[in-house]
Image (cartoon, rainbow, N blue to C red; front, side, top):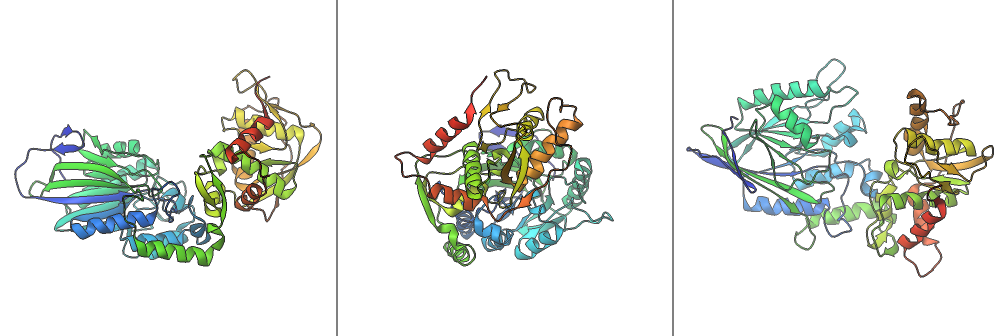
Length: 494
């Protein structure tokens, strides 16, 4: 589509044009991340998204409903139990027209992406830049939809992948070619991109035929569409976790194929204001009772929000107690995905914090000197510090990353440690490796031999749930307990 110059007035963009016009209402989501259940804070959940969209569609015919990827992971226990397949089934029930894959969907591998595609029903899964070894595309790159008489072309783009995916430059060039091809047959061209808004702006300069970028990946709450002045394209994104549905209403001159006006907003999926899809709500509940009946078991009543770092310390203590190990670790930056909300907390709420990434847990033997070196390797390689239980740490006054964190561990004593396998693989081993590769290992007791682990049957969710349940019935909140726990582990400055 060709664009004329645009005047920005609040949330409405106007063009002075003559001719026959028509409208398209783009409803969009991104980064749903397995949030099937209604969220605990009174907002969000896929049944509310579905209920809202179905109400809009009952009122008008010019609607296209799109998703910009990362349907999978980070969410509910029942979704985890099905490798996120249930979430794609729910997407089909919600009536999405098209979408693309995100990096967390791609983590399952191409065969599972094809399974997701089959479960999405009429929802067309589009992806331009996942390719086979011979360079052929893995999925249909684009499709054209008749939206109440307006021809709308939609292209799918995942954030560039290292394995069998086009890199950033190749992706941009492929998008430019596909958009130019679609522009010949469509009145409006939309790129559904699991890519942050700032990168969509760069893509717009290379692919000016794209009229709208439905963005994702960065979990941005963009209340008003971003206008790319050089091309006239609009960029939208609707946060994450099914907390919003984005609306972009466009008026088009069908003779010139120019946008005459565009109005955008985000609609919060507040439970008090939005009527859910009751059929989906019941179906999700039934599937949860069937597959993960423990998810809805009440654990305790929480009186204040508990942040990710605090949950990391709680997780480290819970894993240590559950295993009988000397020391527990739980890296909040890598393992913990969500805070713990207020109100009635069930097992599913605990799972949402670190249950997925803490599902596999390992133990190992390690000297006090090496454990201390792990903390300092994190610091020197600019990884956020892990959280721990079972020893005290003394933090340096100087902020220089070369001033050592010290502990009260005996250097040559061997300790049994426990941590999520993900932390072991992507933090402990990588921190030591990076420290050596970057010449930052001086003074660190970097292990010379390969460190080995043993698997356990312990999970983060079971350990934390049991730990909270067994806390003494003192007159203190969980947040106060964690605060005192952390104070016992850290001596602030030396």
